[in-house]
Image 1: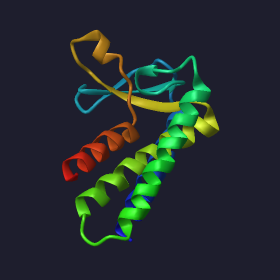
Image 2 (image 1 turned 30 degrees about the vertical axis):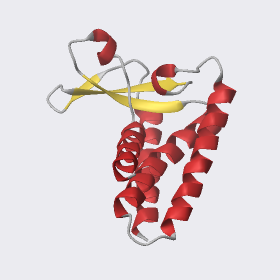
Image 3 (image 1 turned 90 degrees about the horizontal axis):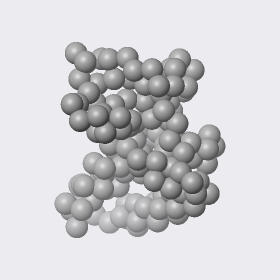
Image 4 (image 1 turned 60 degrees about the vertical axis):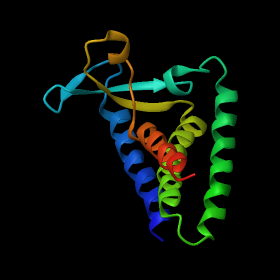
Length: 147
């Protein structure tokens, strides 16, 4: 099924990218790419978005796993219905990103982030992402648009 393939593809691509960054990237080093608009780096995020909850990693792990379970249940229930392709796509994209980041939290103890945007605002320019972060945001947006 196409929706399960989306989840698997996101998790697989992220696993490869994160492993390459773990093996080859130097923490804090920034290598520009895409004409300097983005930079590659390696960052270990011990919390959630913007390191929220980094002082309570077990809570963040539990919350992440719990939300994955809830979204998986909604996904499974939705798969049994006709239509709702936008919702199914949104849940698939969201779950692909969520599974990837939750795996990192549970197995590594941190999420591997590896790129950022070059912007004039220093605070915004210091935020580091991974593809899963965008999958979660885009998937959630698609789900909200469909509801």
